[in-house]
Image (cartoon, rainbow, N blue to C red):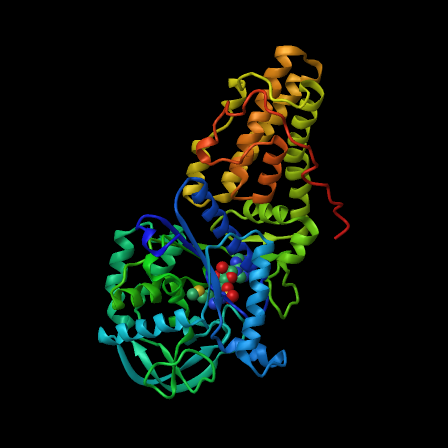
Length: 495
Ligand code: MSP
């Protein structure tokens, strides 16, 4: 995908870039798996996709974590963590096209220029700042933002800081932002988040500090000896620095904790610097773990790689994409994961594929017969509905729809009892089931790419795109592949 081939209108999706004071949690994996599924869905649809993820490395948190782990060289610590993040995403089947690290030269260069653009617009001035800073959020808060004097996200008391900083005239963009949000209903989604952002803006925007003095780590402002760029200003710039010619992004996928940064600060910076705005910022909800907030201090942070190793990467992907209605809050539990794995994957999907292949072996000599898919069955498949759900990023509903077709296929097998049938009758029923399994494999690719591959291997066909997600494309006379068990049941109490 060369720089010149990229045209406007293609699909450019991002995840937040993650802090490197720890390895991925099932929380960051959630966002990244959704983004991956959306990217894969658009590729399946034949679109040119650019899927960007990466790491936010210039935070004070990096310095603290490096010291705590005994590193004197912070870059060395960052490099080690980056390797771990990349390996985790690889393990989870993440298909990003680029991985941006904010300690890279390409990033530094772009954000320094970006800052000068803000300055050139007359939107940056020097002043004294006194305020409450939460290092967890890397942001200043007012008393009003706090809950019982503490940061609502980190439950820690912010530090009172008094320093000379560069300020950005955020106040100047209040009306422009409101106008943009009003004119572009797709800009902030879901609606509940849009309303939240609108009321925050309407309360009145104050200018914000965009530099920090005396920081040992971070991106310097050229010509300044003391000031470094505020980590959020430059971190947001990652969306552009990875591949400036591809800007603007189609979709920024973020957790609801960081909408203020993405829906107020970032668009204001972009307006000031004279760039286009991203088409959509979609904020998904947060999930708790067994009903409790996931946090390092509670010791309940779950490693997604551990889950993938124990239950299978596609079971983890399936559970996350299916369990939590996208945009809403939810709860993560191993019990729920195991239940869905056993019921929907091993029983429903696994069983269907296994029955189709076993019966074809017994009745058809492992060869696709000449027949047409039973209209009674193909009518139960509603591609339009699935596409509609995916357009709204409702992965849980899209999966529910795909699995309702899986159930329809199982019911069809139960009702028709092909093991009792012979000749043309057996051929028609089994062709219908094998062809449906092929269609299911195509649709599952964005959600469970490994499983999808394993299914088509058993059918001995190529996967195909959304265009091939229609019936009667399985070729008569073709030999089927080797059958294998897709999912083995897990005992619930062995966790
Ligand atoms: N570095 C900033 C983002 C900068 S983007 C320019 C940051 N990093 S983070 O490592 O804290 O990641 C936050 C993101 O992780 C959330 O916005 C969300 O996408 C994801 N999640 C972390 N925990 C989560 C849950 N418990 N539930 C859902 N998503 C979670 O903020």
